Image (cartoon, rainbow, N blue to C red; front, top):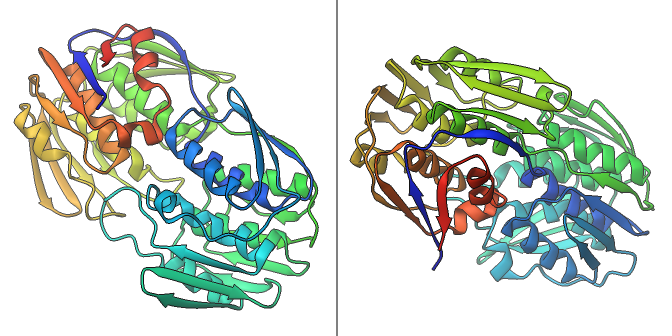
Length: 417
């Protein structure tokens, strides 16, 4: 089994390019099933979740050709097949197949999805939304069976701002010749990226990136080309990696406006940030300062960067508080950081107290089933004295594209063995 070996204490300096967004890639690949002509998706990150989604769409007859970070998909001739349980079990994002399946086949038999173990993550938001859209929903053993007999239309109200549920409804509604309004929609840039693709395919969409989205779909959607937006979560992790080592770096091929909820927090902690075009440069000030973080749906601070920034705050002077508003199981990494020397206390499943700065020492770590905890462990290894070993890279490779190579380019002493 592969593992990362990190010799801590090396300052990160230099420049690196940010990969395409994991979350946007998965929804765009699923959306390609709606097209009756070939589509091309570029800037796909080289991560395992993308490979899983490609296998899932191939299973229903989509022809996929890969050229580096680009994929050409021809879904003009599909034949229904249940999503493969072994693949669905690898990632929760397989849920985004519901919308395209209902649009193309009128049904789907979906196994319980897998993915990160970060607390209770029921799919009730998806099921409730599709019931509002006239879809029948049944549970049969470890499967959900959804069927639709009429086009999506009318007003649908999501019980929460769910990225995947919003994307699912967008894809379903884009193939319905009626008008649908999605309310309490997620506002993430990944939704705007998906909407851009669906518009190119032939749908009419207004309000993507806001809590209210209007969709007028088409029964036949054509082909299109789309580029995946930069991964704002990878960008945030790399900026924090530079800060925890006292470094100076530049991120290229990034969309700074997508970091509007991240950069201000890093500046409070001790970063000097300059934005120019599609580049963000960061210089770390001599002293990091404690701060409080609340995770919120976009445009709030992202829950997926909660564990990396908590790791960064172990090196900040004073007491920091983390309020994790979204998941009650996202502090799984804390016990390992405490063993490395961090002064952290889980007050309850949603609140974390951090006192710093504290020197971190080398340790053998095993990544839990949370991709972002893997990011936290990498940051801890970069800051720690001595050599840290991180085992179980599966969660890390699901979200971070060749993260070890990018960090090595910046000067980290990191090896995959």
